[in-house]
Image (cartoon, rainbow, N blue to C red):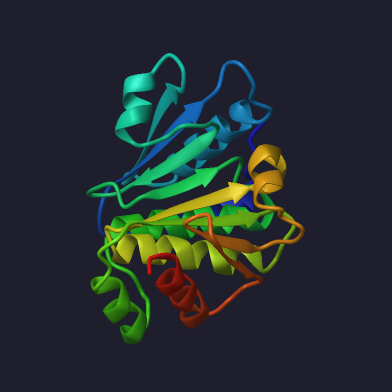
Length: 213
């Protein structure tokens, strides 16, 4: 049975129409423990079927360790959204519920290869000299999470120093516990700076500035 009904499939097709570049959804599964790997693979394949510019690659994180290392991936399930180059866009877990829109917007951002950020944010990111590990913890039922997740993706597309990791917190309880995720969205920069809620770009820039100081 298809995960996307006819109406949603049409909406996805419209949203991904005329992508300016090719996008590869590279999925790493985990044969040892993975509750939603089957559904994730089905979902990305149904999305890819709506556009000639979107394709899917599948790997298993243990058997395909070389490919995982090349993309700096250490845990699964994860979708790496790759455009003309690897912009560092990662979605850990299944992008269901409200987070389905995050996947679609990430595909569009990777296809563009440019962000839609404001000029002040772009200017700051252009001067980054240290890497930024930008994590956003989300849940499928959170209506505010896609805004935070998309901001992370946009910043990663804008700067080669930023790596955006959107994490479905319920599927990765070890990370959720490590960073004491009590509510979502929660943004964590370089494992040190925390920003709760759907923060605007300026607040995230301030957190990045502190994290790389």
